Length: 188
Picture 1 (spheres, rainbow, N blue to C red):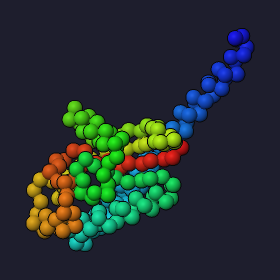
Picture 2: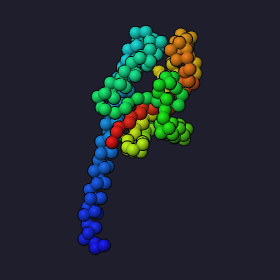
Picture 3: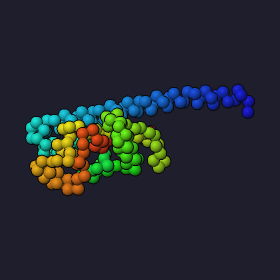
Picture 4: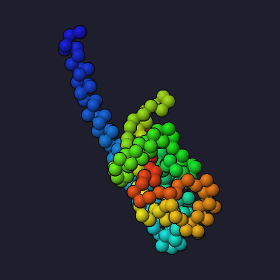
């Protein structure tokens, strides 16, 4: 084949790569913004509940308000937005295969000394007949989180968790652990 016949293909490939990189960067930025909105909105509701009714009120916020916040952001963006963990409190948040692998990698990186606040992953994956953009950002366990997710829970907290989440696994964390992750799926 003559070189001049390859020129259009080379030009198409050269312009496609930057466009794809730009689209990926936009998807990452949009995902980070959606997660930031989710995290800050939830944190605001949790802090208000803690001030008004203590930890047991905050547990109810996580049970009722967190799924609503995820649903609202999903509706706004057209993406699937949620939270997941290897140690579930809400079984509706169970990780899929890709999320489980990412969470296990986050735990390994955390064990190697990487702060949980620095852990995120994005990837375009094939799901059936379509490509989807996947994004996850670790949820670090902060000191206040240990009130309901630590090893030593107060009696009222333990009773509230047993009542609302009879199969709860989301305890025993230490400050700085990866408690789970925010997760986003964007159809391409």
